[in-house]
Image 1: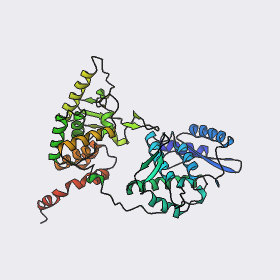
Image 2: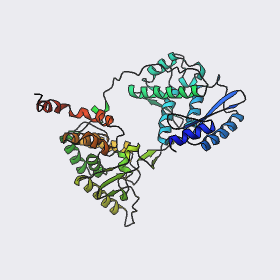
Image 3: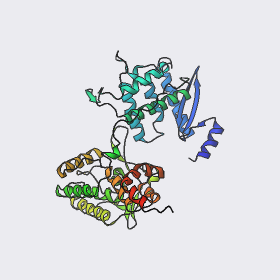
Image 4: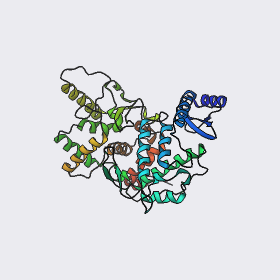
Length: 396
C-alpha cells in the first residue's frame, strides 16, 4: 500500500502511520491502553480482537508487574506478520540472549527485571555482560555454553533493546527510554580484513585449483560467485529460467524461517537486490557445468525450469555453514588463510574496481541500495594503488 494512501486511511480512521510504514492503533480496555500494529486497518482490527481475548484470558499483566521476558514476547508477537520472518528470527535470538544475560553478582538476569523499573545502570551492566561467556538452555533442555558477543553484536543488541523500549513508550507503558549508553568501541578486527577479505589473485588461483582437485561439490558455485558478485542466498535461489543470454536475473534469495529452517523467499534482501547481473564466460561455463551435473544426478527425470541450479550435495538448499565448512577444508589443503563465502563477493568487487569499473555500475551489479555502501565496503581494497594513481595527476 502506498504511503499517501496509508496516511489518508490513517487520518480517516484515527490510526497513525509509523516511520517504517506500519499502522499503529491504540485502544482502551477498562482503564488501560493497548497498542497493535499492522500493514492494513483490517490486520490491526484482527489483532485488536485477538489481544482482547488474550487480555480476558489473563495473558497480560499489569504494566507494573510485567517482566522484560514477558514484554519481549509481547513485542515479538506484535511484529510477527509485519516484517520478514528472518527479521523476527534474528530479533528473537538477540532478545533471548539479552534475557538470559546475568547483570549482577546475585545472578539476576536482564529478563527477570520489571519493565517499569529498568534503569540506565541496568543497561550499562548489560552492555558489559554481553561480552562475557554465558550458559543457555537449548531447545533440547540441555545447557550450552555460548561465547561472549563481539562488540558489534553487543551494539546491535543494545540498539534492538532501545527499539523495544521505544515501543513501550508509544504504548504508554513507560515514560522514558533508559537506553542511553553509547556504542562500544570496536576491538576485534573488521571482517572485511579477515574472513570477508578480498582474495589476492594468487589466493584465488590456489583455492580454485585445490577445490577442483578435491572434487568439491561447490566448485562451480565458487566460480560463479567469484565472477558475478552474487550473494550465496541469491545464487542458491536462481532457477534455470532465471538465466538467459543477457545474464542472471536475480529476483529472490534463500531466507530463514522463524523456526530456523530454510526456504526460497519471494523477494531479494532489499529492493535494489532485484537486478540483472551480467555473466562472463567463466560464470556461464560454471552455470552450464552445474546444470549438466544436475542432469546426470537426476536419473533421467525431467528438471523443471523453476528448479534451483546451485544446491547442497544431497539436493537441499544452500546453507552458509556447510559452504563455509567446505571452504575451510579447501583452504587448509591449499595452505592459505581461511575466509568465508562472502569473500568471493569482496573479491569480485575488488577486481572490478582494479579494472576501472565505475562505482555506480558496480553498485547496480552488487545490488546495493546506496552507493555509499559500495564505497564503504570496497574502497579500502584500492589503498595500494592510491600512491601510484596520485603520481599520474598533473596539478599544474
